Image (tube, rainbow, N blue to C red; front, side, top):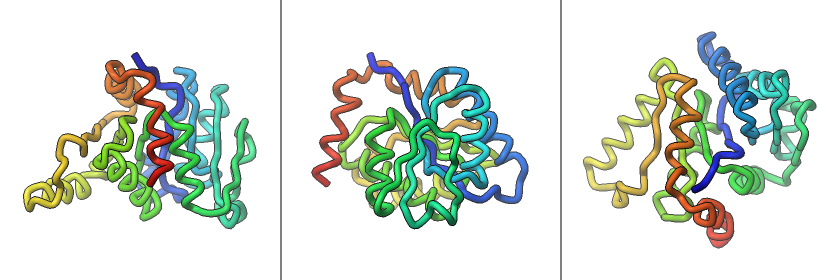
Length: 201
């Protein structure tokens, strides 16, 4: 039986134009800290990223921020993290985030958030890992992506439908129980051996 010890969260470095997005990030940060689940994220202090990390820090949780060198000034690196990793580029950042996470959660965000999420979906479809992937669909933010993936399936472009198996939560308090249920029957070895498989890509 596997456990969720850390969660990698992909989210916007901007706040968006709906206060619900920032509120949700704060709520999720608080929940992670309360469950003693470490946060792995992009290391910035602005937008949803900053609100999420601040909530984790304010409630005594553990934070690993992973940020490429060229973004340390632009995204104002979060200084309250217990661990800060500065990478050479975006590719190294994503690898480091993957290696330190037991699961992935996507909050609202922009192109960068979408790119990180889709890469994890791709690796899962290729059978390279079994770490759960969850979309927090606050304000139906992810509906267009869900529709697009259904459209791809309908036209025969998703050939491993069973492996494109992500979770969708409509409420922030459902995230941790859903992730825990998803890994309950995954052997610990299989959950964590994925790191070496990704290295071969």
